Length: 316
Length: 167
Image (cartoon, rainbow over all chains, first blue to last red; front, side, top):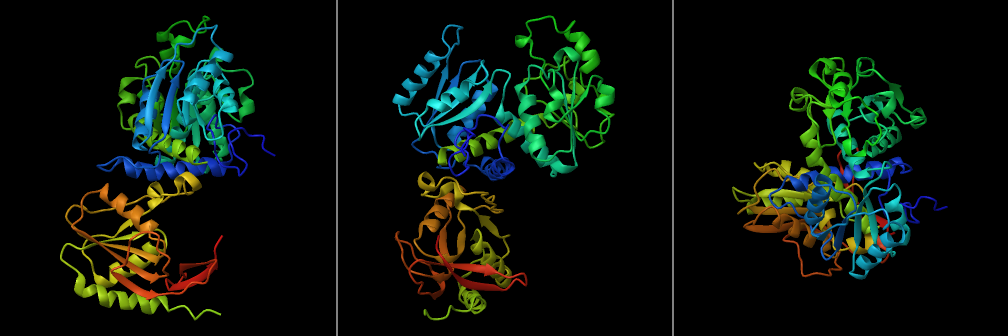
């Protein structure tokens, strides 16, 4: 049985497309490996020779600075050659032309594709067409998944809270448009987190979200009670076509994380955000810069996590 | 039947005696996971080396990554002293092809330029594929074809050499 397109015949990770469906051992293997790479990133020489001679293509059909940069740094610290392509996606150039792009890069001896695409499933499509020695890492596809962000969130939670099986985690904001939320929720439940909450207005809550194993709250004051971890999501203006919200100010009033609302969580709660932050929209500056915030460590851990993912898939 | 394996505890004591006169004031020690760390912990304590013990996992420097992939659960390398200009004792349990030592030296040089590196092993089973030798060696051990020699640590802390069928 080889139903999971991410795994090879031995059950090892060949592509990273989605956290959904990945076995617990594979997730823990990535987190353990990332911990060792954190050691490398703290050295003076922050480079190891694992991917020497390999070419990593950053294939971004959607704009991104942070994710692309951290993938680039991670690949360079693995000694790979990195080629950045910012491909403008137009509505006519989906499907066949996407695969044509990949075939051309493959002819340039690509070894690993890091793909971000506005359409859900694009990295899956590419993974189905690449050669046996080529690997695909999903850097965010549509509303579907952002597995390396989910993994770095898991890494951060594990770093500060150790044991997932005792935690109450709240994910707050625009759940509907958030691939970050989806990836994190799948990871948290796979690793045995007993209570995952999602908090947001009804208009930004996907229907049937309970099926993911989460508790739904529409009020911050209720959802934040006694949580260990608060994950704030970015209000994604560029994804909001319809009039789902009255205004950013209105959103902040109800769902923005302030010190006052954070006081409802456990005293040692950590606050996370995938970035980039909209200060004064989903998070108040006093919280973003406050003692509970682990937002900048998340970025640092993200490099080690991406090093782990790339070195694991490229070796399988 | 192959001859019995040497007693790891005796070899350990013998290494302590050999290493003692070779120590310099700046000597530091690094053990290689897993067996080398066990041995290094013993040697480090017995020799009273001032610098804390370093531990190294060479997973990110292996030369068979492209055939084998990344080792599962690599440990974090921790070198709690400056390598620059130092006399280093690199400790492993068994010396075989020499590839682990090559990888360890490559990793070490990403931490700095040591004054010297000496290799300390409990057992040398021959079969070198690289020009590497141990400056301090407990014993030479004949290992039958298809077998693997490795160090065990019992719950009591006692060290023992063991033969295993190679995979």
